[in-house]
Amino acid sequence: MIFMATKPPSPPTALPVTRPAQDDGGSVVLERRTRKTQPPQMYQVVMLNDDYTPMEFVIVVLQEFFSKDRETATQIMLKIHLDGKGVCGVYSRDVAATKVEQVLDAAVKAGHPLQCVSEPVE
Image 1 (tube, rainbow, N blue to C red):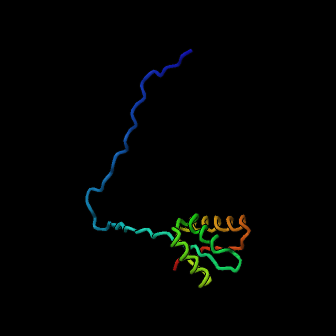
Image 2: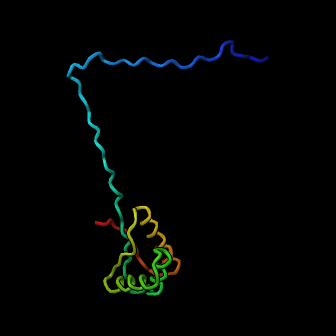
Image 3: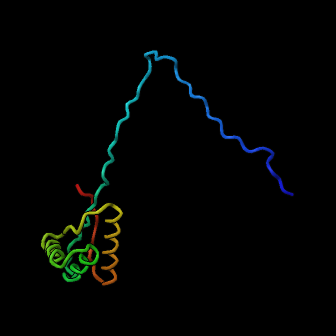
């Protein structure tokens, strides 16, 4: 058995627009304020010095996870060695956390006590 509509569907009816006949002077007009979004808080990945991790391993980590060339990686490694810590890069919070995890995983797999943290940029 086939059922068919007896009449085609009617188009939706539009609601009438009502407007005041005249302005009474008591109307309130809201001004639209444009808001500028703030850029996300940035975090710096900081590698900490220790007396056991080889300098060459630190250079390789900087090249692999932070895309530094050999000369820049060597300069950062020396800063870490001499100052006790060095900034490897500045990223958004999630990217910085991922970089820290990658460095810590590589250090554990290689058997080194290398430490790396992320901290907000001030």
